[in-house]
Image 1 (tube, rainbow over the protein chains, first blue to last red):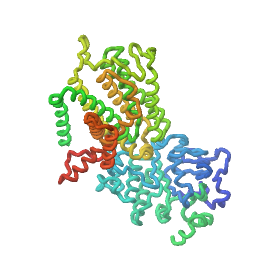
Image 2 (cartoon, each protein chain N blue to C red):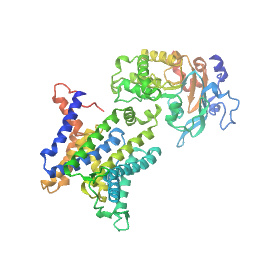
Image 3 (tube, rainbow over the protein chains, first blue to last red):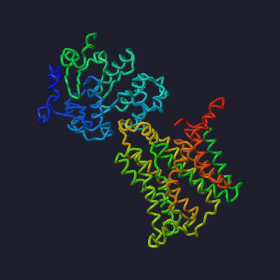
Image 4 (cartoon, chains in turn cyan, brown):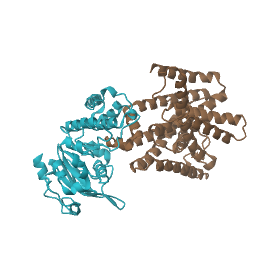
Amino acid sequence: MKRLLSALGLRAPAPPAQSSGGRFGRGAEPPSEEPPPSEHVLEARGVVKEFGGLRAVDHVDFALRRGELRCLIGPNGAGKSTFFHLLAGTLKPTAGSIRFKGADITSLLPFQIARAGVGIKFQVPRVYDRLTVAENLWLSANFRHGRAGSAAVVERVLAEIRFADRRATLAAHLAHGDRQWVEIGMVLAADPELILLDEPTAGMTRAEARRTAELVRDINRRASLIVVEHDMDFVRELGAAVTVLHRGAVLAEGSIDQIRDNDAVRDVYLGKRHARG
Amino acid sequence: MTAARLAWAVAVLALAALPLVLSLFQVVRLTVFMIFCLLALSLDLIWGFGGILSFGQAAFFGVGGYAYGVAGINTGVTALALVAGAVAAAVLAALLGYFTFYGRVGAMYFAVITLTVTLILHQVIGSTADPRYAIGAARLGGYNGMTNIPSLALELPGRPPLLLDPVPLFYAVAALLVAILAAGAALVRSRFGRVLAAIREDEQRTELLGYDVRWRKLVVFVLSGAVAGLAGGLFAGWGNFINPQVFSLSQSALVVIWVMVGGRGTLYGAIAGAFAVQFLTSYLGAASVTYTSVALGLILIVIVLLFPRGLLPGVLAVARLLLPRPSPALPEES
């Protein structure tokens, strides 16, 4: 992991004014010096998303190594969720390209990206309210595993998210934190290679968040993950590398300690929070 | 489960016994009610289960009716004409559905587009009064309609066709209704049906699980169109006549009203709604109420206010309150 972090040039990122172009800069030459695509499960290059005049994602370059766990942090409006939507295909970038396992997925439809092996959990849990927990998981398992395999996968995931005793509960009757787990379970049931979790601990108690961190580390043994989180304790518990987004651009990348010591990051985001942690 | 089967058996037996106790006039009227039930069923498939409001069921019904007329007049084989009606409507639904679903047209625009297509058909078919507008021997007839459409008959090879009298026609339509209702219920319970329910609940979520929602919506829309076309064919054969009134705004709205009144998403509700509204309409007409449509409108408003989810779910909810224990015969919440 350390080797990778230094390989990605994590030390002392440039001040924000210059870093908005990311590592390749605005309209840079094709990044031919990059490592071969097989090393990276995900590569975003020069990704831009504009809504009218607003640039929500501004030339983001982002690479995730196979098997890596990365946290994406940044203040509200930094473009984290928009970036996730671009990765999942529910939004199309204005410019730039996204590659998954070396293949260009920029113009693929969301269901095609999901089939390729990308699973996403949204910021606000999106579960099927009028279906039970087990039915929610089945819908996800059914696609990948078919008629024969789905039942076993549902059982496995129920055990994994510790919902075996609540399999028949309607999703509408679950607490917010529980809905988060069910949606994480739905993602797991499809056995994706890359998992995107948008604020998985929102609405969870401290203990629940700790369990989620455990689960995420567990999942990381078989899949690459990007986790958007506001909760710095959670990020610390994951012990993962961190990418900081600010105003749609990558502000810094590094370990949590490197990020904590970064003045630019402290100014825009960590400031008071890091003082107590 | 067994109670549900029992309810089915009782309903089928009751349906079978009806022609024995009713007058011929009543049998003929019930037959057309059941044809409308099929039409309502077709809308519930796409609206209740697919979550897509289509104002175009009247268009498929009408196209099915005209196709039955054209094929029936030209070939004289009514079974073939009935198939032609269903296929013609299915083809129209496939064309319409392909461009709207694959073009990612929003739900509201879809409803408007389907209504527009229906009204365009009303205009186009209405302006075919000139005798040169004929397909083979079948004159379209403009607003006067297409006449001399053959009655439904049982054609066996090597025998003269056996014309279906009112009572056999009643049984034929009843059998089709029961068969299609059973097929619809099976479809809803199938894996395809469960994914369809997921699309209705949250389309984007379902897509992000890897499901291509476009062809699934297209399939259910085509099936729905085929059922509506079949109903249209039966209707044209029942009355030996069809005119562009089937494409009118009021007819398009009526289908939606049936399903709304009966309760969507249950299949049975659509049938109950079509039956209730049509019975009420003909009762009010017979009771020489001066303003039939005003009275009907008021009753519909009251029903929708009292039972926002529809008559059938509403009645079941009341029954659940009155009964000490919930009966297992009640259908699952869907």
